[in-house]
Length: 400
Image 1 (cartoon, rainbow, N blue to C red):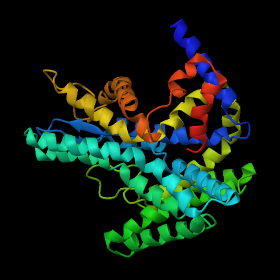
Image 2 (cartoon, one colour):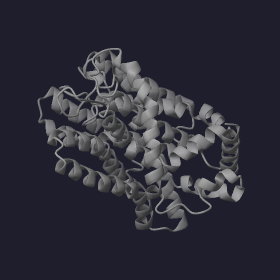
Image 3 (cartoon, one colour):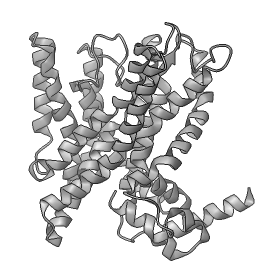
C-alpha cells in the first residue's frame, strides 16, 4: 500500500509539473465532473430486471417519483456542452491564428470523438449477433443494444455543434432558447405534432454550447453575470415544474408521458442554464483545488480517457448484470425491480463492482481514444517519476 501511495504521489507531481502554466485546469475539472455525473446517473437510475423473463429496462424513478432530485445531481450534460463550446471556440480561434484550415481543425476534433466509437460498435455488433444465434430472446438483445447505443445520440449532436462552431460561436444564447420555448408552446400549448419536439435536440443543447463560446470571449469575467444565470435558471425551472406541467425528473423515465430529455424541453434547458451558472461560479474554488497535484492528477487522468469512460460504462454495468445471472437467485439491487427503498442501498453496493468492470474495459479499449497503441514513454511509465515521461499525457489532454 505504501508503494502504491508513493507511485501515485510521483505520478501526480509529474503531471502537475508538466502541465503548462497557462492551462485553465477548471475546464478539465468541469468536463470530468460532467462525464462522471452521467456515468453515475446511468448506474443509479437504470435497472435491468428479470421480472418479465428476459432482461428488461426500468428505473427506480418510475416507482418512487420523489427520487426525482437525484436526476438533478447527475444530469450534467449541460455542463459538458458548456465546456465543449468553450474549448471548441477557443481552439478554432487558435487554429486560425496558426493558419490552420477549417478542414484540418474539424477533422482533428471529430477524429478524437469518433475513433473510440468504432470499437464499441464492432464489439456490440458481434455480441448481439452471437446472442441471437445462441437463442437469447430478441427483446433482451434489443434492451441491451439500446442501452449501449442510446448515449451515442449526444455524440452526434455534439459533433454537429462542433463542426458548426464557426457559424454558431457568436450566436447569442437567447436565440436557441427562444426556439426551444416556441417549440414547447407549439407542442404542449397549441397541440402541435410531437415530432416537432426533435428540433429542440439541436436548439436545446445549442444554448449551453453558445454560453461556453461566450465564456471563451470573456463574457463571464464578473461573478454577477454567472449568479444571474444561476438564479434565472433556478426560478424558471421551478416555475415550469410547479405550474407549467413539466415532469420533475431531468432524465427520461420509462412509461412517462413526457420526458424532459428526449427531446430536451424548456424545463431541461432552464435547468441547464442554472447548472451552467453554478459551474461558472465555482471556477475560483475549483482553480484552487486544481493547484493540488493529487486533485489535478485525478482530473487529468479522467480527461485522458473521457470518451472511453463514457462509451463503455453501460457495457460494464451490463457485463456485471449478466454475470450475476449465474447466481441461483436474483441479486438485490442488480436484477430486482427497483420498487422499494431497500433497492437504493443495495444498488449503491454494486457501484464499486461496476467501476471495477469499467476499469477492465478502460484497460482494453483506451488505446482507441488515443489513436494508437501507447508509446513506451506514455502514461504507464509516468510512475517512474521522470518529468519527460509525464509530458506526453499532458499534451494529450491539452487538446481534449
